[in-house]
Image (cartoon, rainbow, N blue to C red; front, side, top):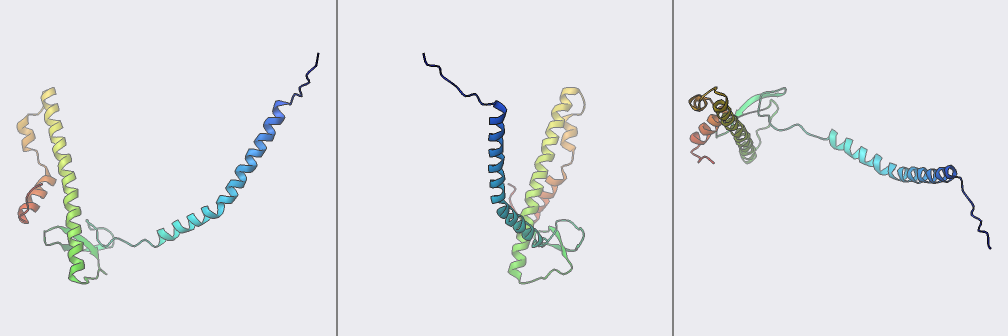
Length: 157
């Protein structure tokens, strides 16, 4: 009969060795990444510091104190140092201002109408309010959009 001899290792010793190897390899990987992380951080800081202020603001705030109005009747504000530049640049800016304003008002109008419908539905359920009250409820963004489309002879989307 052969006696098999098995050498038993102490479980804690094996675990300590594998943990040590794992932490060494993780530390090595981290030290290899440090130069790349440093460059990434440096690039991010350079990008943030090079950021320019927007050309216009949809509301009067801070440095944006000079009001301008697009041909479509949308107000926007620029800095006092605003350069009128060539007309084609101004036309592109004003077209952009109007498209942003219309998109914003469309979202507001949708929210106003949704709230209006919700109130009318809940009013009927709980006995408060009537559909007549809801129809008279103002929707300022919708009204502004309607006025814009009418003033500029545009069809309503």
